[in-house]
Image 1 (cartoon, rainbow, N blue to C red):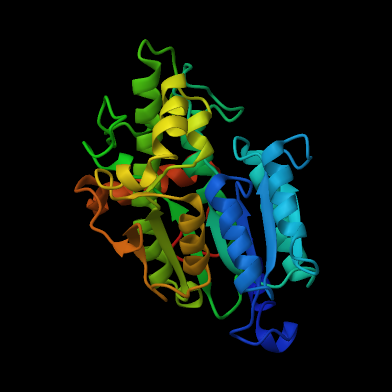
Image 2 (image 1 turned 90 degrees about the vertical axis):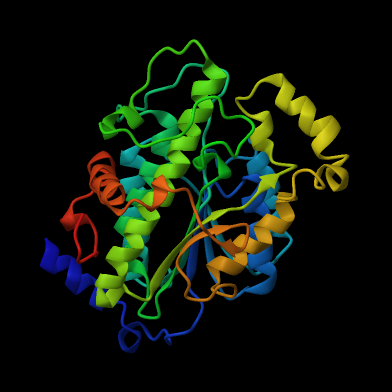
Length: 353
């Protein structure tokens, strides 16, 4: 299985497919109908139209107003190479099926090799008990971290020889004491399985946000480990992973999804209309359009070219003290592969998982 996978990667060499080393390729965006993602897609279509965009959402029909908005955005760029596809990141089976389809399409030259994966999709729930997915994992952790990890690991071999970018998202919530919604600090327990458990909670908002913050800490630490493994694997060393805290997004629909009414009211009557004033107290408050442009430029390697690691807005780290613990990073790396059901036979990464 391993040897066959290595041979498959050789099919991506430019003298076989005819793709020059620096040409445009395919860009995957998860949660592509999100507040930041729609603007990232628009920026990609406007500034890099030669790329092929594979945009994933949970509901591909226009009955979802956010997908309808995404489709309207794409339609403003006639001739663009875009497909909108269904992907439920709460299901490991759906991730496996999607990754397999993309791998096959690239091998059959129906898609060009990947140049970027933007892992934008997210979930949180601050008003209900934590949920378990069909895979038996806490939903926030699976959607935000585990499934994106599975997707990236399974698709590393579908990048071209020129390499590319993996863009993941963290939050200031990963850093104890930095987010005003924090009631319980984020942290990586000795028993890593505690991160993926779910049960009834008295303080639904506080524990819901802690689950979200823990998922963002896990993403950050996993990205550090991913970069170490990529750098050790010569064929994949041209793929760089960045994990960004895009700031506090004043117009994000996240503040209106699975949240207490007070957050929606605060967004409607304070954050959006008074954003220039609020920024005097919250300097990282920004519009989704600005964050989306940054994400697109990172994915295209036009900002911080070839750089790896953590960015707060568009400035390099540092991240929290715990996130820098390499021993914990490696333990989480191995546990994530277990949760994601990814083995050495499922990824091109020579360092193993």
